Length: 555
Ligand code: DGJ
Image (cartoon, protein in one colour):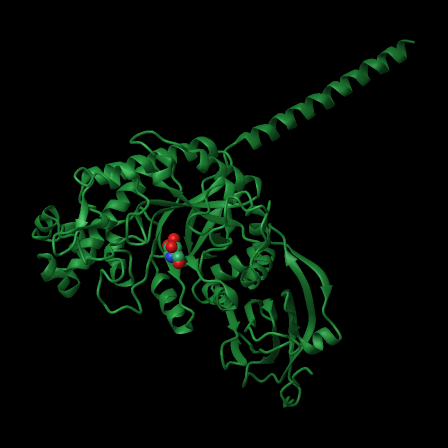
C-alpha cells in the first residue's frame, strides 16, 4: 500500500514536471511568435548587394498592380491571380488623395485592407507612395491642395505659367507631403511592426517635371541665381560657381534634380524616423528621347542625374529602374547605368511577355538585381462590379509565372551564386541559336530552339548557371540544350556526366533531389518548357580528342 502511494506520488511529480516543461516551452514559443519580425535591410558584401527579409537573403519576385487597382473591391478578386503569378512580393500604390481627404484627417481603410490582404495571402508588400509626384506630374495630391495654388504653389514654366507639378521649393508643399507620409508610416508601424508584411517603401513615383526643364517661379529664379550649394559641388568634386558654370547645358535639369532629390530625401528621412523601412525611388528614364529635359520628367533620377541624387538623397538606398524597352541593347544599357557600386539594381517596373521573362535572367546574372517586378500584372482597369469572385492570370504573364515558380525553388542558391559573383546566364535572342559560356575548366554550350515540337514562336530559352565546385554546376532554366566540354587547350578532351540530379532547394538552402536524369534525359540534356533545376557533376578525361559532330537537333 505504502509502495503504491509512493509510486503515485512520484507519478504526480513526473506529470507536474512534464506539464511545467510544456508550459515553459509554450510560453517561449508564444513569446517568440509575439516578437516583432526584424526589419528588412540591404547588405553589401564582397561588392554585391543582397536584400534581407526575416533575416534571410530575399529575392524580390514582384508584381505591380495597375494604378487604380489598390482598392478593396478590385483587389479582393485579384489575390488568386497573384498566386498564379508565383510572385512573393506585391507592389501596390497608396494614394495621398485617398488617405488625407481633408487636411490632417486621415483614412487608412484601404491601406489596412491592402496590408491585411497581402498578409493573408502570404505576400510581402512594397508600398508605392503616390504623393507629390506621379509620372512627372502631381495627379495624386489631395484636391484641397490642387485647388489652392496660392498656398500650395506649382512649378512654373519659362513663360511663367504654373504647371501640373508642385514646386519643391515650397515649405508648405514639403510639409504637407511629409506630414501625410509620416502619418502613413506611423500607421504601418501600428499594424505591421510584428509581421513586417511591408518590406520596403517607394517614396514618390517617377519624379521630375514634365513640361519644363526647371521651376521658373520667382522664388526658384532667386535660388537659381545663387551659387550651387557647397554640399553639392563638394559631393560631386566640382569647382564652386553658379548653376550655369558648374553644370553648363545641364544647369536647369541639375537644379531641378538637386531640389527634387532634397525634397524626397527629407520626406523619406521623416518617414524612417518613425518606422525605418528601406526606401527608394524610381525613374522615368531619359534614354530614347532628344536630350531635352521636360520632354521627359526633368530632375528625376535619370542616368545623367544619378550623381546629383546620390549627394542629395542619401536616405534612399537605391534609385530603381522602370524599363519597358524590348530592345536588348536598350535594356542592358539601362541595367548597366542603374547597377552601380553605390546603387543596387532593383527593377521596380518592367514589361511582361516572353521578352521580359528572358530579360529577368540578364538582370539576375549580369547585374545582380535584388529584384524584378513586371508592371500591370492584374487585368487593366478591372471593374469593382465585375461579377467574378476571382480573376485568372493573363496568358501574357505565363512565362514570368514560370520564372517565379522556378526561382522560388532555387532562391537561396541563386542568391548565393550572385553573392559569390559566379552566376552567368544564357538567353535566347533573335537570330541566336547558340550561346557558349566559359567556366573554370569547362566550356558550356547552350542550344536554343528546343524542343522543336513547340507550337509557338516565342523565344523562351533562358538559363541561369553557376559553377559551385571544381566539377559541379547548378543549371536553372527552360527550353535549352546544354553540352559540356573541358576548356579548350586544357589537356582534357572529354567531359563526362557523373550524375545529373533534378530537384530544388528548400528555404534553408538545402538541396532536395527529386530524381536523376539519366538515359534519354541525359543524352538529350534539354531543359523542359516548365523548367528544371539541375545539379550536375562531371569529370574530365584525357581521352583522345573528342571531335563529335554537333549533337543532332531533335526531330
Ligand atoms: C510608369 C509608372 O511608374 C506606373 O505607375 C505606370 O503609370 C506605368 N508607367 C504605365 O506604363
